[in-house]
Image (cartoon, rainbow, N blue to C red; front, top):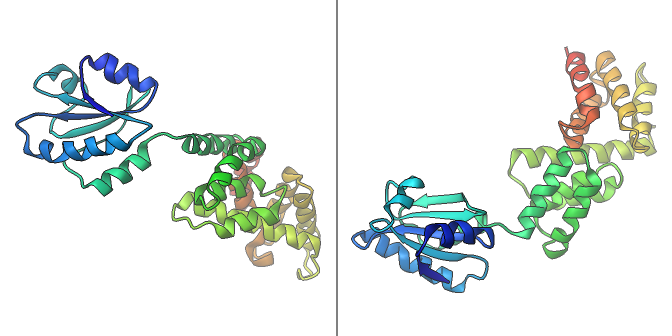
Length: 270
């Protein structure tokens, strides 16, 4: 649905509290505006979750000035009374569709954002609860797969690694999480049978760390791994350092265990 603005506060700011509003700042004398407007209007006709409001800058100069419109056409997406995304100039329809898909709010995006926040706070159960509906609707959602793998990494490492293996991600943060999940899964498997580990002065400490990890006694596991880093960092192909990095990554920077032991780990490296 699209219409010309009558009152900016009512038609855009107030309305965007109920559903996103896409604002097309334009003018009748603007050639590029005449190119873009029909594309936006066509997309608005098929849209069910947002509306298009057209704002003639000659007739609504105050609104254009308030929102920093310096060139037209200017398109701004309003959500809850604020500009959530914007672009200036003419774009082809497929690029606008991609832009809308990326920036329009949805329950799926909200759940992923909330799950990310829960994981940063160390609340893996809440993240798991938030992510299951996303994966039920979209089993191949790569980010949701990686985040769920993180949520399950300690209590169900086999399932966590399967999810991590399925996900294709380019984002460096997600790749680090995925790799950390695989590291923890390997260590939990090693805890079941540590006979392949070389005999060494740190083996007992390393095995104790593995057993603590299997029992989800993460603080004890971390303390033992740090002891191995101090004594023989090369043991198990730098396994103790990798384990610490994986634990910090999966627990999150705000987790009490991370905050208590990260500095000790950093000092152990040098």
